Amino acid sequence: MSEKKNYVQGGTLYVCGTPIGNLDDMTFRAIQVLKEVDLIAAEDTRRTIKLLNYFEIKNQLESYHEHNEEEKAEKLLQLMQEGKAIALVSDAGMPGISDPGYKLVKKAIEQGIEVVPVPGPTAAISALVVSGLDTSRFAFEGFLSRKGRAREEELEKLRSEERTIIIYESPYRVQATLKDLERVLGDRRIALVRELTKLHEEKYYGKISSLLEELKGQEVKGEIVIIVEGKQPGEGLETAAWAELEIEEHVRLLMAEGLSKKEAIKRVAEIRAIPKREVYQEAIGIDFGK
Image 1: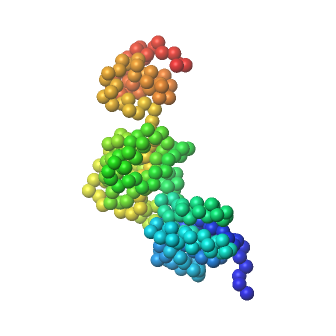
Image 2: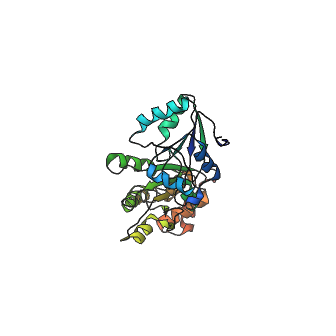
Image 3: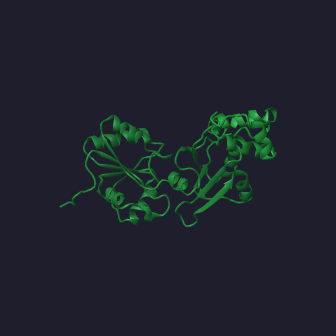
């Protein structure tokens, strides 16, 4: 008699999170789902079989990756329409987050197939919560385009992004990306996290310029997440452009960006390298409510 299935039901797609490094981060529910489904669709069957062997899971594997999505999606959808339960996994983390999965999920929903998340580790959120930057609002960018106009357009859009920004990057391009971020966004605070949950997990904190100096000559290895501070009030007014402004006008512009009068006076004094009392005297006529 076959083992009773408690965690899955037929005709369902289970989107399963898997460890991003440390295999012991696998959830009990995910293990049971992978044991009980009729089929596991995996981004790389060679990597997934190692995970299955670690947890003594014996089940059928089917490759499902970016190069065969269209073809395999139709097959998997047909099986679910026939009542089969299928688990979707990527090499690490949650499927669909900079990994294959979105198209299959979209088509399953369109065909009325139940889609169930089985939550697990995600590099983006794991890096964000240890970044020391604002976690209340954030924008996930995934991998930036490698070069050309597309990359420049993406960077330009990020210049005005006020939310904390999450970027994935290859170790081979990380220093070039940091230089591009500094060039377009300015010298913002960032956290660079590599090899999350693995033996050689490492974190770098500071301004982009200081991290570039620290990483100079180093060969950065492993999976990398870059967390970038969002645009701050008054950012962009700290360049030579302020030289053409009267002090009072400079204060008003910073206040329009969201700073209080007190904060704007302090910032203008810092930017112009002049005494705060001098700025105060010039801005004394500005009402606090404006």
